[in-house]
Image (cartoon, rainbow, N blue to C red; front, side, top):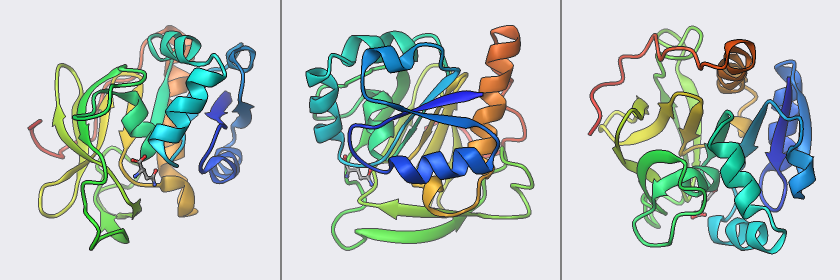
Length: 210
Ligand code: GLN
């Protein structure tokens, strides 16, 4: 499986390492041609305004939009903001996923923190919590259409969502060494490659959309 990582700014190397650990081949994406032949794409964390501006400058905006309209894409943190259809304030970038996000939603007191969260969709997810690293993280304020929340904090805050082949996490699974989110995304991507359909969202009990 060849998985691109948008490599304009942010946590690229960490994603590449975990993709390799999970058995995939990472490819750095800096130019439109780098998207050719990819099975899936990761939009990493970083600074969403900066990544957005660079994407425009490198002529990547339309190619990324086309890619996200057809192939598996996973946005982590800033990447989730880039993927969202509604970002509250800034104009949306890829506008691919039916989620509404709020930037820097945890405020200054909680600049960064780690929290063990239950993610039923992951392998062993009900028994083995996932160590979620939040760094000036956004929140998902609404999942619309067919998008579903797949992980919440104990207080109900939505921090991960899936819509078919699209995945969004407010936190940074690439910083943990736990590759279950990467394997989950590869599972979705493999199914898309095999039969053009993402797998159903199963093993989930993260609650209703709100
Ligand atoms: N706060 C950043 C933004 O709005 C995201 C932070 C991150 O990706 N760790 O772009």
